[in-house]
Length: 559
Picture (cartoon, rainbow, N blue to C red):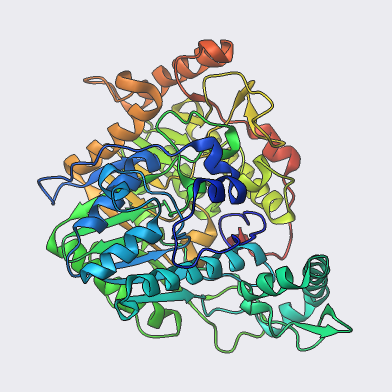
């Protein structure tokens, strides 16, 4: 219920403080490392013109750039990520000369005198127990990196819990469900040896007031009724000195590493887009956002942050009847609405979710007002927690909302809209695991990017999906591009899917591009997976309609 899905339980490594992990540690504690290997990539070349944004497609392009910027930083680095795992492997040649993982890189730069500030999102310890544990596992690793450097005073780390809380009445109504979740957690912990149970509890400090020990066993407390935190900090960006801003939709951990070829099992793919931007103005704006967003969460009056577009909400006072936080800044929502209304030729979108019915209405309104407007939308074939595991009730509610939004958009655009989902051009096999991990006999590519481009001249890159949670609840950050920067971004995204023939030909209109792309997509759909020439296939709307469930009374922005 906290944005991206819960990623399964977290069990800590045997001992990680102050020492790099061995290859055996990687294989035993995160089997994905064994599958992915330890690819070393050439050092990236940073743009000579800092004013020109550099699009980074997938972590194969983005992670080496993040490492390079961190290595070149001289005074301070400030970061805010939803997920930042210091035990993520390093990929660039220069970074690998220092160590194997980000733990080593952080300790090295602290020794050199760099000041590092990192904020990681904390999660509701009951509703999103595993990610709460993941945050505190990362916190422990970062603190250990500071100690290993010999200069822990140069490192500032924060587990940032969004202060908005569910009102008293909804908490009472959800009391039995909350208590049941606590009881299930207690049962799981009781099934472990005592030492391991203590380790698990140390990674879940938020459970301390909700579990008690009786007769050597943990039990869930009936009172007090726990606070519930549904909003989160979902932004993902870093600022290096006063020179570079790294911003978009990509967090840092090994789950999110993927290549441009997406040559891995479906459940290990992760398509994302970041930007590297320079220039005094945008970097100063990013610093202002980092200085202010936590105060705004607590009720302070928001101030302009220039080119940084934000979603920020705050705790309601009093919060008696409401589940939702108080909306404070909705710049990303308004920027998307403005971009849709001004588009005249082609809107290109990559998004993890299309669930906000207001934005769907805006797209439909733009389609009716401009008969020459085309639309290409790239979506994952299914949300992560439905594609690769049994869908929870909130995921099914998200399917329901998305199905309604897609139907509205398709009706308005007609054949001027092409909604597609990517898949690897090979036949799915036993490695591609999950109830909705395949489309048209091929393994899906999971899309996590958040990109919108209008007419090749106006674009938004951010951490925000096109759902109510990102537009109104969570803390999000992004930037708006124009002119050649927007065109470069669009062409890079399009070429990733369809190669050099993807961007519009000279004189080609948006609807003509949609028709041409539809021919390519349908031709690939008709081929056996091994003979497909590209990665895009028609978006499968029927499963969303069949599996989606409406939840009357539940805020749409929850998912």
